[in-house]
Length: 291
Image 1 (cartoon, rainbow, N blue to C red):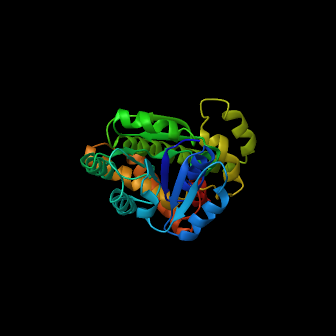
Image 2: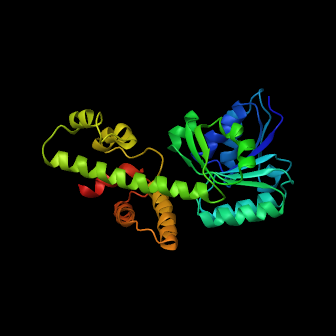
Image 3: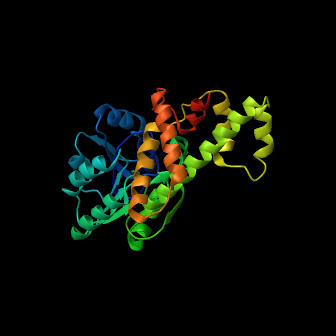
């Protein structure tokens, strides 16, 4: 059992199992969630003899004495609010790790504030969705100091299949923006292909079985084509959250002068899905607006 004391703030569809993996690995884990019942649910599931676990009703109580504090909350506003509560009690030499998908600006601001307090900071957004979190198979994109990353990486490895430091503070968030830009274009292309195939009278499942063996192959095709054809759109990462992420990417593009024409278009297509009542459908629901 490790003698490291860790805290996990935010027990949504990602944070709940991520914190669980740390408990299973033998770390002492303190958790906090804005909805206290979720924290109690987590405690009920992971209270076991192999690790010391506790749930608290404030951020400050959950973070007191922690060596590493992990966060996975909603957006920049949430990150700012929760991080400041955590930093009020975190000790010098500890580390704050933000797994939220947020802006590079807030990552850099928190890095500077942590530096002044002799606290390490990593922006470390994740990819892999709910299934990746539950199976401990997330990919983590990290920005921050290399020595801090080296200390924290073995702990994150319990819920990640791969993590990588990509540069200074903010680099993790910028990489996550690239990830979401890629996904937006791929899902739209897949939706159009399935729409085309259905209109052409093809057996789309058979076609996907063929083309997934060639250059058109993608994770989205392998994991979402059949569910899209069956009108199943309840696989975790919601349209509302994707629009939040794309908004961050589009805002960053305006700052750095890059052109994201396709991303902006797909963002508006997701707005169409929201108008259909699909804000909580997963991102593969782009197909619904073509029917």
